Each structure stands twice: as structure tokens, then as C-alpha cells.
Length: 225
Ligand SMILES: [Zn+2]
Image (tube, rainbow, N blue to C red; front, side, top):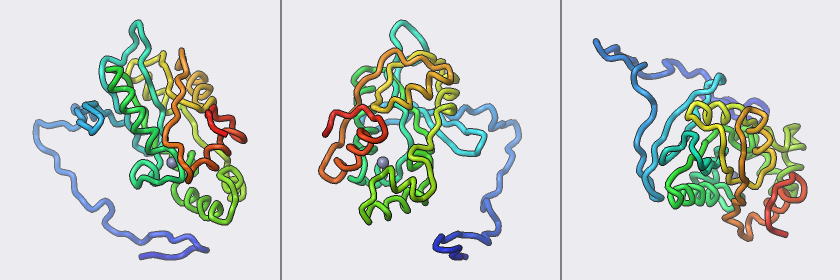
């Protein structure tokens, strides 16, 4: 059943949720199976490992090669989920091309990891992100739209990412990022960022205003006007 609370459509009154039953097979313990598997992609072969944070959200690390600490810290990208950009190819932001470029760079180097965090819309969630897009349709920029909704310009945190990385044996990285907050966030949680690699792709006419707002008003290190 759908109900509109104010303008927000909320789905509720679902019964029998979850809809499946689990069956215990004798002599077989699911606890013994690591959520880590081979994942072939268009960009090459990776492995993927799944994690769950205390808030119940599920995150992933996509990786290849031996990424635990050795002489050369691996190439790492911290990517926050963006449904519109990652899955639908939205041109409003640069998330899709950034994700693909990082997969490509890691394959070229032969080792590295992408920490994929389920913090949609710079941490404000999908519903609020689309509300912010609606405000942007009226002429507000990406930062003002969030502030008008009473939300932070950037509500992301990197403690979960740092713990996931430590679990993989990572403590020193070369980070592909334009965002100084990511470096600060990781270092505050015990991950040393030995080098920052410029990571800019997917700049186009539909997102230059968005990217220039990130550069001018949010301190992102982008090489655009
Ligand atoms: Zn995006």
C-alpha cells in the first residue's frame, strides 16, 4: 500500500517481509562462507568482497592483485553510491565515468581497490537527492539545494571505509580523488594517504555548473573553470 505523507510517498503495511524462508542444511554452515568472490567485468577481472556496517547498510570492495601492504601502496578509489550516475548514466554528475575510470586505472596498474560505499547523494539518501535535483531544476546550485532542504552539503563519512580497508590489510594507499575531505576522513581513521592522484573524468556541458560549484564552494581540486 502507498500512502502520501505530505508529498512523500511511503510504502508501508507490507506483510510477510522478508518473503523467503531460510532452510538449515545439515552439516552446512553459512557462517563459514566468506562473502568474497571472483567478478569479471567489462574492465577486466576483479574480486568483490561484501561488508555490512552497524546501520545495516551493505558495502563492497572491488579489488584485484595483492593489495595488502607491501612496498608500493595500492591505488584506491573511495566511491559513494550514485544510483542515477552509476546505473542510469546520468549526465548531471560525473560519478559514472569516475567509477569506470577508476576500474580502468586499477586494471592498468594490475592492483588496487574501489571501496563502494552506500551513501547515496553525498550521504543524504536517494529521496533527498532527487528533491535537491528538483530544486536545481528551479535554478539552485547543488550546495544551496541541500541547504534549502535543511541537509548538509556533504553528509558523508569515511569511518566505515577505513574499517573495510583495514579488514583487507590496507593501511597505506595512493588515493584517486579530487576531494580533500576524503583524505582527511581516511587519515582521521588510521589510513595513511601517501599520494593523491588527480581523478577527473566525465566533464561535459550538463555537469560543468555542478562541478564548478564543487570546485568553488566545496573545495574540490578540479581543473575546470
Ligand atoms: Zn552522481
